[in-house]
Amino acid sequence: MAADNFKPTLWEGALLANFHSVSIADVLATKPTEIKGQKVIFNRVAGGTLKDYSGSVDWDDIDTTPVEMVFDKKKYFAFALDDVDKVQLKADLLSATTKEHAAVLAETYDKDFFAALLAGTKLLIGSSSAKKKVTAASAYDYIVDLGTMLSKKKVPKVNRFVTVNADYLGLLSKDKRFTANPKVLENGVVEGQTINGMQVMCSEELPANVIIANHKSAIGAAKQINEVEAMRLQNKFADGIRGLCVYGDKVLRDDASAALYFEVGTAADADPINVKITNDTKSPVNTKEVSA
Image 1 (cartoon, helix red, strand yellow):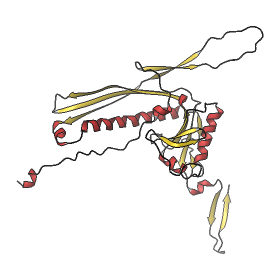
Image 2: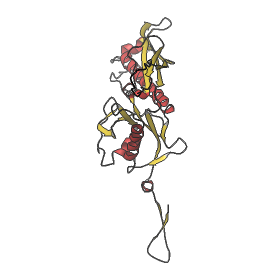
Image 3: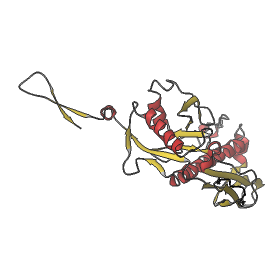
Image 4: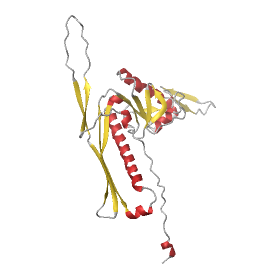
C-alpha cells in the first residue's frame, strides 16, 4: 500500500459563502401590526363623503372593507452534519449552513412578493408580449412616467419606491441626471437616489424584463418562522437542523403600483427615427433612407 494513502487531509476552515440578494420585500410592503394564526385581516376604510349643509346633519356609518392575507406558502429546510465532518472542519459549519438556507428563503420570499405585486398591478407601460426598448437615453424618463401614473391616481408622495434590476440600474448610471457610481446598500436602497419622488431600489428577484413602482399601501406581506430546531438524529451519527417558514402576500390596492415591461435596446433604439445607411456605388457619399 502506498504511503500516500496515510497522509492526513487538512480541511480548510474558511468556508466560502454563496452570493445572495438581501430581502427587500418588507421595506416595500405594508406589514401587519401583529401576526397570530394563519392569516391577517387588513381593513380598508371607505371613501369619505361631504354634504351641503342646510340646517340638519345626516350621519353616515363608518364602513370598512376587509382584505384577507393568508399565510398560504410554506417552505422548510432540513440538513444533517456528520460527526466526522464536525471533527475535521474548523469553522462552525452548522451556523454557516443555516445562514445559507435563510438566504435562499429570503430570495424565494422576494420572488413570490414581486410576482404577486406585478400580477395585481393595473397601471402598465408595455406588456409581456410588447416590451419597450429602453436605452441609457430613455431609462430615467420611463421611471418618471411611472411616478406620474401614480400621481394621477393621487397616490401619496411619501413611501414611494421604484425597484429595478442590475441591467436597468446600469442604464440609469449612464444618465447625467443619475449618479455615475450608484451605491446599493445592503437593504437594496440605492443611496441618495430618488426619481420623481420615488426611492430607487435594486433587486435581482424581480420578474424578468420588468421594473415596478409602488407605494407601501399597494401590497401587504409578512413571514414568520414557525420552528427552527436542532436534534440528534437516531439513524446516523449526526446532528440535524430543520426549520419551517410560512409567509403570504396580498395586493391591497391595484391603483398604487405601476410597472414597465422592457428590454435593453441598442444605440439605434435611442432615436425614435430609424435611420438606415446604404452605400451608393456611383458616389463616394452615403445616402440616408429615413423611415418614420
